[in-house]
Length: 97
Image (cartoon, rainbow, N blue to C red; front, side, top):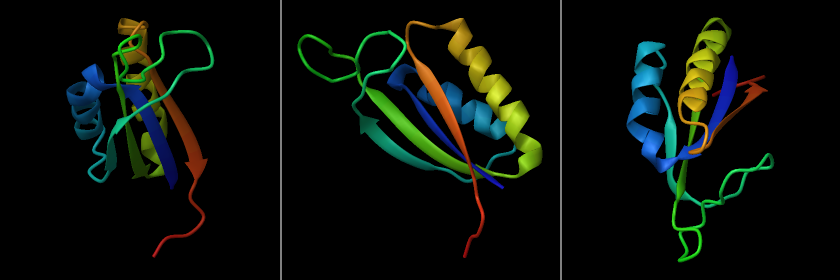
């Protein structure tokens, strides 16, 4: 199993949910509004007068067999609107309860 942490511009929220559904990834935890700045450029998401946009974050745990499809679809969404920002990070899950 893999944990996939997704940080994205809030404008992507509905599309992220659609991608999770289409990849049969039922479970997730949404962190709601978060602030941040990417390492490779793009605008900060700080919710301030100077930087008004905000981000959201989500964590989903998926079977290994779903990882590549999910990451591919997330990457395609990021490529379609690169100025908004979307990142996904993958960690192995070694145990659950």
